[in-house]
Length: 181
Image (tube, rainbow, N blue to C red; front, top):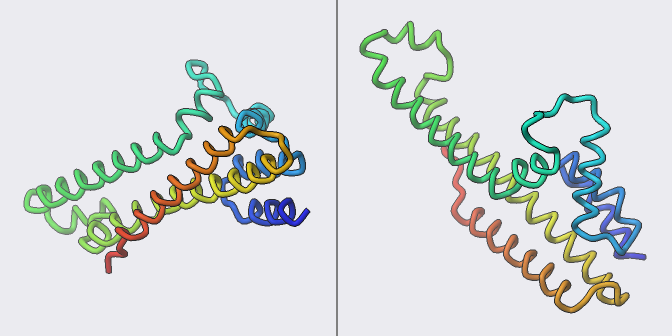
């Protein structure tokens, strides 16, 4: 019972609305598996009135587009775009003048050096922290399921390995993260 209460409390702290909603709805059933998490997210997405892309099924959106790997790749792309914007700003100043550049926005040196770096770092840190929290909760649930003989040793070991990897990745990020002042 204490583990279930812990899981419910911990899930309440997550800030991924769809993920948290899917997890929260499933915590009471200790036989939950990863597919049920995905199904919960899909059900939430299908209940919305949003128009989804006809070229991309919702399961592709949730499992690939919203994946950790894709998010980290997109963060690197955003970082590259901001670096390009910084270069473009520097090259444009002599031709357009400081006043014209200033009216564009986000062209001041403080924003382009401090802001761009800190903004991207905050997003990456959030994504990595949430992945760590989810993997930790999944591992806690797997411990309970294993104790109750609802999952195999192999399944338990996979959850433990995923949690340990997420923990290492988040710790490595924290060790390398610096706020630019």
